[in-house]
Length: 208
Image: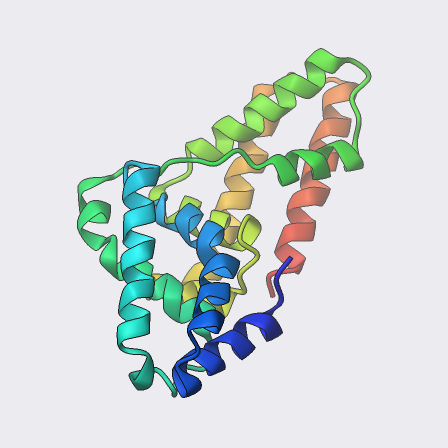
């Protein structure tokens, strides 16, 4: 698990000292996250890998001009977004990566008596997320899956922090509404709904 300190140190070695070893370490630290991010805007992993490689190649070539960058990770993600813009405009639908960690959280908060109920809940969560509007879904994924702060998401997507908060609230509200409508009103479902509501509230409180 990489830390911001690692990234900052590698970045400084690259832009101030032209350290090729630090550049290689920086690339390996961010590669998977960058590819996952890029795949939200393009239609294949191969394309995403090419774009990420191009971004890092540009970074190395222009390293001497990047000494004023304060947040290297955000800078790289913004560069990837910009290079993906042509694909982004052509694709109105974003690919979804299963939220395994969200599933784990749901399981921790509430374990249904029957395996079938748990599977139905997981399927409903996936469908609820899949139906979110594009920007709403993108914001939700960047915050929930990539662990970015609202200010970082705002900078990456070139929107206001207020918009990020609004989109997260809408995402969580729509997810909760979908789950509530999917299951009939009986005691077991009330427990599921309460558990889901607590998870959504947990996410929201950790955004502010």
